[in-house]
Image 1 (cartoon, rainbow, N blue to C red):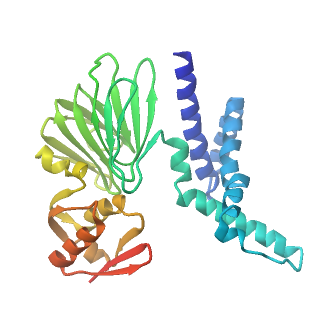
Image 2 (image 1 turned 60 degrees about the vertical axis):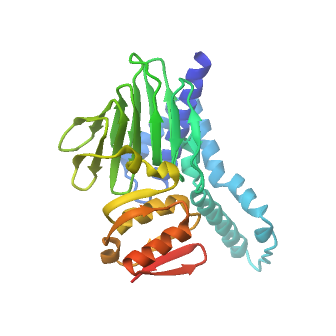
Image 3 (image 1 turned 180 degrees about the vertical axis):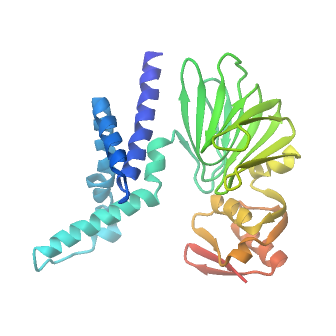
Amino acid sequence: MPAKRATDAQKKRNREAADWILRNGDPSQSPAEKVRFEDWLNRDPENCRTYSSAERLLGGDACKAIQSDPALADIRVRPRSVAKPITTAVLVVMLATGAFFAFDGPLRLQADMIAGAREMPVFTLEDGSEVQLNASSAIAVDFTDKRRTIRLLRGQAFFKVAHTPEWPFTVVAGSSSVTALGTAFDVRYGYADTGVTVTENAVQMEFEGGKASAIRVSQGEQAVYDYAKKDTIVSRVDGLVSLAWRRGQIAVNNVPLSHVVEEMNRHFEGHIVILGQLLAERRVSGTIRVAATDDALAFLTNVLGVKVTRLGPLVVIRR
């Protein structure tokens, strides 16, 4: 168990280091934030070492990775003044930083399990619980003697929890947390809301800053917490329909087009955007094969009469 605790402590330290890199890159960072960073850095020598390692991913190591790319290695710059080598170095660092964020560098520093754009893997955790990740989703696992905590960093996941009442199992998604009561359930961490669907038994869902601090969600129910309204709607659902994503589909009834495109983007290696807010709010109903992007776009074209324009890895949906 001591070795396990050390591993969990390092995972926590990695997450904190990634978080501080993001904060320290913000030009509007407050003096108080800088003081908190210094306190964290001086609290433990390992904090400093971990932060330095994370910084190297943004600096030398990332630069080497970019320079080892054949397409970039062929570029030759012949500086004519002192300013040009400096400009070139700055450009390489900017490219390295961009690559770090473009390829989910901060997320990878925090995550223990990640699903790619065309993957929906199933994992067995050390307690025997099972988790299936939706495409483009990620989780961090933190088990201690007292609690089992999963942080849903992005996307959606289905959990079938090993029943151990004395060892609580909680999934944290943003400002919401879901604690299993001996159960199987799904959590979706979206741009506008967090949704929980329970297929077995029940869960306790808690919120920070919501109109209700906690609610119980039972088998056959779905709770959706709206970030803007800070309110939760609970409704009866068909589990097979609600969890169609596990088969590469979504079954929707009168939802905004933006919701459908969010789900499609999980499975798409490029990026799909909607041109115009009114179009984003158009309502869609039906069963859509989101894992097959061409089929999903054809469905939207037929149902909504929209036009689709492809620009390399970018797909634009317009009127």
